Amino acid sequence: MNGESVEKLARMIARGGVVLFGGAGMSTESGIPDFRSKDGLYAQNFAYPPEVMLSHSFFETHTREFFDFYREKILICLTKAPNPAHILCAEWEKRGLLDAVVTQNIDGLHAAAGSKKVFELHGSVMRNYCQKCGKSFSAQFVQNASGVPRCDCGGVVKPDVVLYEEALSEEVIRGAISAVARAKTLIIAGTSLTVYPAAAMPQYFGGENLVLINRDITPLNKKADLVFHEKVGSVFSACARAL
Image 1 (spheres, one colour):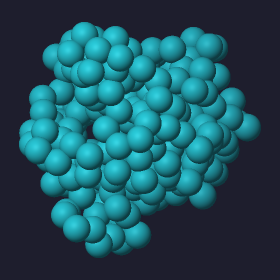
Image 2: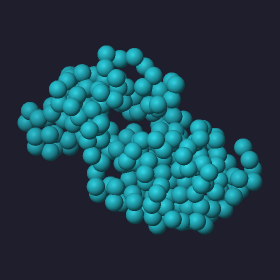
Image 3: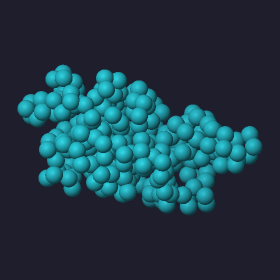
Image 4: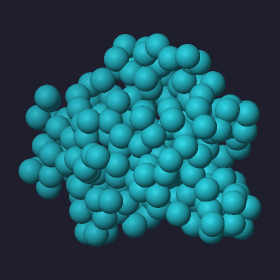
């Protein structure tokens, strides 16, 4: 890892006004598989493609199969803990250096680490609601239910995650855009910037410093002030030592 680049990033963070835009690479270091890598979820064989099983129409027409897949492959995050990248984001927020986290992840690990201002573009497995009466349920309730999780009123308990064919929350999008637009430094971490509409979020950034941390090349590499092809946790830990 380039020491000079780490020191530059540390100085950027020290000036404050930082917003993190994160993807699956933020959580792979916690042991949560991503979707699109060669070892990811999409590379595995199932009765239906994962993007089908995680669609709104599949949820409606094959509800039990949806939950069987969801418990086995998505709720694995309930057994995982925040990694150094999550923890440092929360620490920098407490110190007034990081203004917000905008994440594509649904695992809830930023909140678990202590981050308060988190815009979860694709929702969170930690929130679940009865489709009939609106009562809220924990992720553990969904995990431990037999078959289709149901409320006492008989309604199906649906995870508050954005499935394929569903729209992102307008309120969350507005908050995320506002945070990105106000940022002095935008750190894009652990995302290939290929999943839309979330991948369009960086276009609202007009601040001073654009930083990319991702193992693969992204469409914004040439526009970035700093680029790290390293693990996010390693880069953040090195910055923490330099702060």
